[in-house]
Length: 609
Image 1 (tube, rainbow, N blue to C red):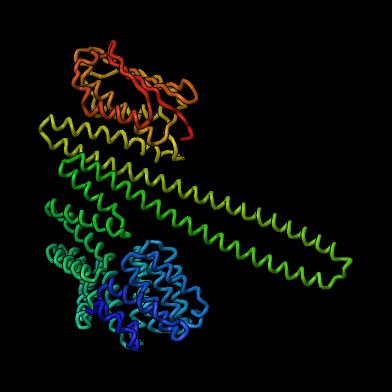
Image 2 (cartoon, rainbow, N blue to C red):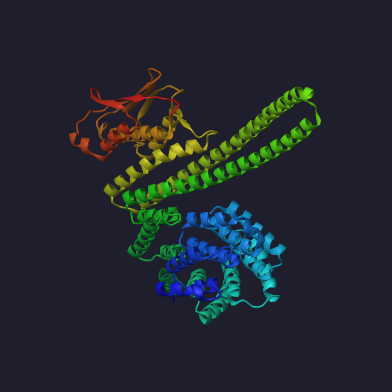
């Protein structure tokens, strides 16, 4: 393996890029490439210069340094001299496509891949066509379009027969074919191809391909339920990627091993240790990796282990990561649409104005001095009208685009609420299963409390998912449905409770405040059922929700029980939750202990929030 001490001697070699490729450690390769790029003379040897740029961009991509890769590639693609060297231009655009692919910007990646395919076809470059068909197959594999992936991999096999054999490209071709067969349940064929790749890679001492193939074999053996063999192969791949400094591939192999352990009942401490290592690596090195599946699996493990507090903590982290990922991807797509739209409009306007100016100059030169004033006035009027028409056209298109984006965002938010509702209901169902398996009634009480609180949150997302809009919850409908849920969970059917409701139908709150009010209501009613009605023959609870002004809503919950007899309950979790959620919605409240217990809340109200 080359080290930093060998970097200075690279420039003396005939083929700089070939020497750079022999540097297996990615960090060292980056330093060497940057050094060569500073010394390179684009005028003296433009082909070599652009090839060094493409190689350096590929190393940036491998370290998730996508911003640096994109800046380097775009700045060189804008240089006029690149258009004289179509092969080098194709390889620069190929790395730009990879940069977009690694960031899950799939539409932009596909656009660049198709552009590269067009360039290689234009110059009739068989090696380049083989390379781009392999990349296209991998692109469609990652987007789960296996029929398209098969199409491009088959084209690749045809091209490989008509060109001089390139071992590195053949390894890549066999490797991607193996991955496609693996994911379409043709495991034995996948293993056969992987061993062909491994044989060539070992002969060439290509550590990167060896690691990729070990990872693929690990996946194959996992599918054949050979768990121990799969684990060993994954760990061997991890060791190589770690030695190479390839963080992007390292994190994905680690996640493969973690899922293998999780799905095959490895000890909880081993699974958690691996997941914590993944989280630390992603956060410290700021890698482009979606942690939502990691937190989801951790949450599920804690549910099975009967640790509801940890399960809820990891579920919140999963939810935050999932929402953040969706928001980032959606913002990227919207930004690209806006940028493309604006660029097209500016180009059209510049072309239009340029044509008009040329026509104006020609007309003015053919007229005498007497007609100049009239002609200029006429041209000014025409330009003014054209500007108005163009502005109206742009405004109309912008409005259409905004409507489309709003529909997409609404659909996305509805889907988020649906997923959150389903996940909360899944946790609730698991808790109920756990309840049925626990003989100890004291432990059942705590799990039942957790299930009740999760149901209060789940109901909000269920209501939002079933609505045409996604902004506010009608509190009357929410509280009525919440009471029905509570009756199923905590109310003793042998001693029914009478609920007297006075709820204004025009009061709405956003999701945060709705959840808070739901949790407050749930805790108060649960406390009343547990402590207030032991000696009450006809228990009842009065619930009132009134808007007393444009900015204040009064909310009260009163029972006819025995009052605050159990003073120690003031320090319980339910009481603390009431206080926490009251502060969250900035509500003032008082507790009146007279003919039962009455909670009165004075809640700030703003329908626009």
